[in-house]
Image: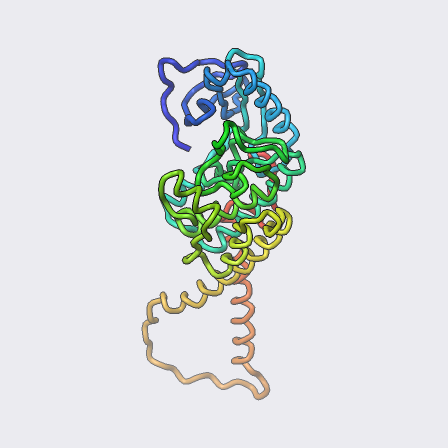
Length: 347
């Protein structure tokens, strides 16, 4: 996550936290890197002054913070502290070191099927905990997914809302990011866990494609495509395309649940990682330089009954199997998550 120096107008201390850098700014306020007396680092968001004066916003913000306190899951940034009665309300969450999924793809290009599925499996598992707390994130997108050393983390619950609430802040104004919003959000209808499934599907399509499945354009164009057009998934690995297409169904009822999605993505991640291991082994002999030819010596005679060639074949097969297991595990560890174990503890 990019850091910027504090500006003259920025506070230096908020609550018990000393502020060090700006992490970013958005529609709700400014996010800072801070730390407490013990050195614990946090991402601290201070609400915009105009919003702080809006009593309706303060009430909604208080409900959102209360809901965030109920979320228990290793794939979310834990709420550390908040002051809802301050002149400018603020809240602090765990600081997550690592790039966003958006920045990772922008820098290194689209992810492989194994990487995309493994990250998606962990995020879907994280959403299970979010939804069990009665919260819908409502703004899942690549920039709200951070890739920490212990796996992906969902951040920025700034517009999260209790399950079943509308996404309209003003008449005709949808809350969220065009291209990753669900159709029901665009229409101003009630949100549900399936809303986050749609956004996660769009986010994983971005990871695999390097672009939104609804392309680029103005906000109006993007919102129209989300509601009326099918996602463009050409280029998404075949192992992922059908599942992502189901996540991006226009109707909530046609989308998989977060539990179903997590299980399917774990299966795909493991299968694709094994496939990558096989491909690495297949390519390996072609990458080796030809050995230096030496004068041949007469083969020593062996007692009858011994079959050295057969033993060598068995040894090669065992070595090959061990290499496949090693490469598969290495690939999964490199993704930053343990697919078989799901979300892992604090950052």
